[in-house]
Amino acid sequence: MNGNFDVLAVGAGYAGAVAARALAEKGKKVLVLERRDHVGGNAYDRPDQAGVLIHQYGPHIFHTNDKNVYEWLSRFTQWRDYQHKVIANIPDGESRMTYPVPFNLTSLETAFGLEEGRRLGNKLIAAYGAEKKVTILELRQNPDPEIAALADYVYEHVFVHYTMKQWGQKPEDIDPNTTARVPVFLSRDDRYFQDAYQGMPLEGYTPMFERMLDHPNIAVELGADARKRLDVTGTELLVDGAPFAGQVIYTGQADELFAFKYGPLPYRTLDFRFETLNRDDFQGYGTVNYTVDQEYTRITEFKHLTGQQVPGKTTIVKEYSKAYSGILGEIPYYAIINPANNELYGQYKALAERFPNLHLLGRLAEYKYYNMDAIAARALALAEALA
Image (cartoon, rainbow, N blue to C red):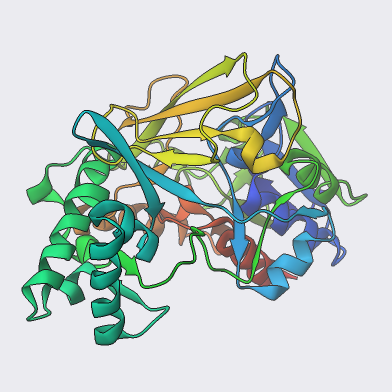
């Protein structure tokens, strides 16, 4: 091991795979250890029994304003032009109403009727300007009672119940700073993202990662638990029982790496319930958010994301959020960011910093939320620094 590899990368998701490829191209020999039986991390996709390409760990839609990241990833995939749109599905008396989220001018007209919605939209544009994203906090601070009432409507119908389900919180426990950032988009642009580069890997995420890791300087071991190979209990970092002078890029849970010495870091996990239906289409959109009722937060229909044609069949997934307990099979998806948890993470980060050749990278290792493009950018920057 020590004679054959310069770098150990733990994890074959965005953080580990991008860093491994970038370092391999700089002449470093890299060993990638991946606990799962596949590459791609949570972006992993595969065909299900009906032949529908699904995202095993929930929908992943690539979007970025970082041209460098987009061009770097484009070396390993072509892209399908896909502009993600999300609608909210909420009860409306005896029926249901749907409108775009983020809440925008179209949403206004759906929620309040064409004439009244247009009047309110014109009032907002006069106050803030067209094509602007205005937060609930800004709207609530407006002296016009109609505008403040609109902020309350968006809070109630788009934000608060969805957030309660997503994070397991009561309204009074939700961070006011989070509430304040919820936007109303003064536009008819119904896309969920406005980034310059958007799309889906043409053949899927998994082939993109397979190409990324296909390099003579990279060796990948699947089903390999790094906890059995990487020892951080002493004063010197050990790999396979011997001191390792190379670089270690660790992308897993920081608390797990140090055997939960200070206690587990809290996370939210997700329960995905897949259904294959004998029909061409279920909901007309890639993602529908259930912002007020239902136990699940959203339903994703994969054929809309991928553009795949599977006549007479479609696969959906309902997404339920719950507290992560660490039992076998559960996956930590979202760090619960608050001062107490940040302080706990800081203790684990201090343990890692005792080893100058150990680098924590990614959502789990850094206990932060990152989009895919941000992780790729951080991995490329780390590789550049270590080369």
